Image (tube, protein in one colour):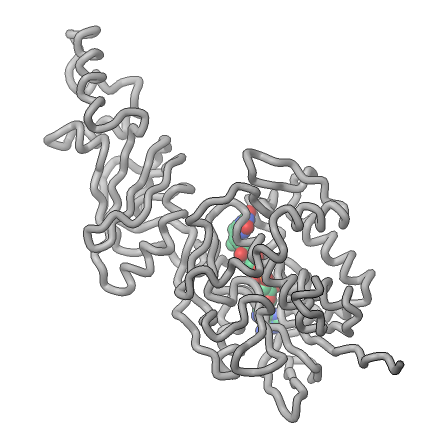
Length: 397
Ligand SMILES: Cc1cc2nc3c(=O)[nH]c(=O)nc-3n(C[C@H](O)[C@H](O)[C@H](O)COP(=O)(O)OP(=O)(O)OC[C@H]3O[C@@H](n4cnc5c(N)ncnc54)[C@H](O)[C@@H]3O)c2cc1C
């Protein structure tokens, strides 16, 4: 029997998802060309998780992913799960440490993850072209043609894995969206996510870090709440709980909705039980004024802010902040928005508009919560796109 011709797959972007796609396509015997704008692969990957790379998360949370086409991400995530990611990286050499479900390489270096991906890709024969920027792409007579600043490449399949506009890491930008749009794809406006929120100013609180809860209200409706370490800043508010609500908050502001946060500075007590707790403190130390009563509960800076409010309990339990926007793209970890996933096959990541065209990673309108979910999306979508572009059926996987 004549052997089937191996497919030639071009991948644009050697970040997290593009490297995964390259390894998968190559392991299915495709001939792979991986084109990367930067002089090295995985620049953004190498700064993730504060340089330690939180590469996946084994906790399931129902607010982990967002996108206009809700649930699109689920098929790819179930075909390549967080456990698959841990096994995959273990085989490549990453011994992982588990911090309450958040997984990191034991080396403590995000660059180790980029390094093992590069070594595996090179071992499989992926042709990596760094310092090469994809400028245009088109499909003519069943062949994809990619024009770069250096050369022209042709292939049977094309994977766009150019990432998003988020972060100041070189290579972050709009190329992926532009290339997708040139094939007729609709782009949902990319906006910063996993970032701080700019709020109505609160003089004197900048520099405070405290455990608390933020509740996001959009047009008066409670949309989500998150607890953890909150950072109070000169522009507003930050910290992981704020990052988690920032995507929907920024999109709602851009859609001219009324966006507020209610900050709970003392989640250990309910609004109903807090008065009794404070009364007990008053009884124990009757010589203290209302400000001194809070010493030991909150940092001094925050006490000064809270005690300016007419009513102490609502100030502690539901401090209102008007959200006017988010920090810039350069200060965001990811973008919400991107290629409209209603035009993409959820199992294969293939375009519904152009056969043989695929997407993976953040260029798609899928953004995850803080905690390793964005890289998991890069691995899962890269896995699907790479295998499918090489001609492997999802059913065979
Ligand atoms: C500071 C920071 C910390 C983060 N920490 C975490 C974390 O701990 N855990 C987590 O899950 N997520 C984290 N993220 C998010 C995560 O890094 C991204 O979601 C992930 O890298 C997206 O993968 P990707 O392949 O889509 O894009 P990228 O990894 O950004 O790769 C895209 C690649 O395409 C290249 N490219 C762009 N345009 C072109 C072109 N025209 N031609 C050729 N190449 C091109 C870029 O140079 C880049 O290398 C963090 C992000 C930042 C900014």
